Length: 120
Image (tube, rainbow, N blue to C red; front, side, top):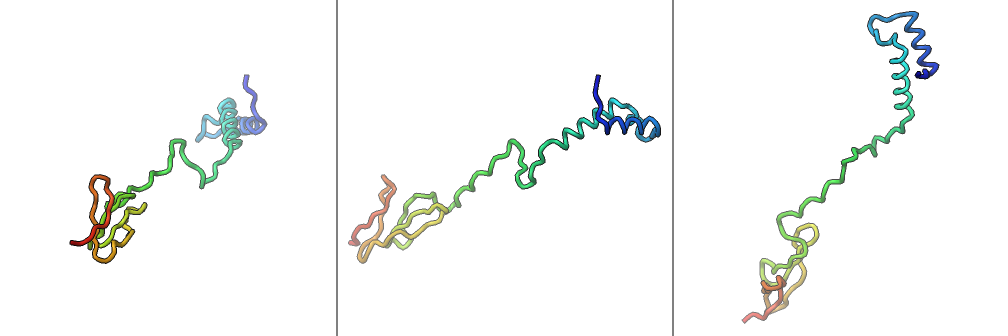
């Protein structure tokens, strides 16, 4: 046996007195009671804030890959050969140092580091 809310009973009584041909299911008090219970449950459910509403499977997007310019943390000699540079976190080359007068930069390919050698 189902207990109907007073609102559902009033709707059922109104539907029984004034039948509506457009909604034949409205005359069924059990269906009205179930609809009223569903509406009450939906109204009682906490409403999510629109700014914080996210699906359960949502994750923040991964950071974008670095630009193709260089790999962060890598070293290189400058294009002029008189100094060296390091690749920053943004993927861009940053000037790191000057070799000095009468010297030039040379890469050590074994440990991937630049060093300055005298000009001959």
